[in-house]
Image (cartoon, rainbow, N blue to C red; front, side, top):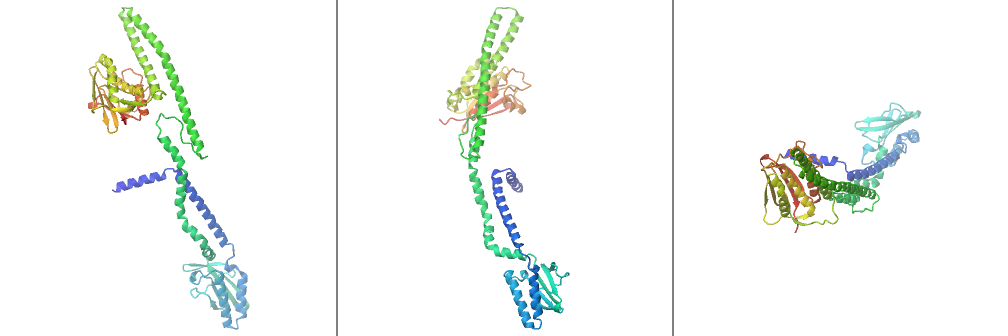
Length: 473
């Protein structure tokens, strides 16, 4: 259970750390909002420091000292006046009646005796240097204190305020404006995410159309965005598809022309060699001419496979898909390849696993070429006296064709590479062009099919299994 939980957590983490355009745009919006808030906080701090601290007003000290000195002979009036000064300080610094720790402190001495203390909780504060602002720590509180002295009657006035009094005051004064913004900030994330998600909808439409295409579909994208940011990308993709399609057409045309040009001299060479062979009785010369004919057959087969490959790569304009019976196609190909199998001493074992036909939908010539190459390869690589097994059936919603031989097979490491054009097993002794399975794979890609190569029964030979979608009809 713990392992599964860790695995799920690891998958989520890997998905999160993957680069995401949606996340990048969302973070950009959040960063802009954060930068805006940082600017607001900076202005707020600047505004809080724009006015001098209370303890730096020399005129305030002078007024308090003058009042204390002039009313020294009338203690009651002196106390009332100092109390009025204290209330004025509280009023100018904010309403701190409910929080005494944030209220400014005023202490007055005369003739060495403390005559007024605005806060009973604050002990007498003695500055080390007269006229200088000092940080005084009283437990967990930090006060900025300053003391001024008058030589007349030895009058001493100390004013102290909390270290961040101005910041507290500005925050309290502007909370009416900042508090709604601060509360609404988390709720801005979802609208921002939704806006980015909707803005990326055209990108997802392009991605969806591209993903739904087959490997042979090089037509331009049908989606034509009106957005100026997306239009250049779609035009570039369509331009690339057009270039690849045109290049493929030129290559196929070149190979098809070359194959057609080779057919005539090969046929002429075969006719001439057969004529010469018929006119001589010398066994040595007849053997040489037999070798020439075998080479001619290989070259002719290569030309034929090149033509098949070109036809399998392109979609002929006059070739319309149609409903076909896969079992009938296989039976016809086996009948046509019967002479070849008989000449090599190979038997066919053909069966249809289901009652009735196995319908598929596709281009007749392409599917014939696919079945022919599979069966012909099986006959070619089977030993004399061997058997080629051909089975046709259904597997759910797919048609299945299985062709098995008793030949040398293909090593597992090469079973993917044999679908490459002109690739042949280096240990193979049979002659060939390396195009047969490439043609099969090309046809299956166009028909949304699949092929898997495995070892045959008891590990002998090769089993080729082909799946094609069943025809709806």
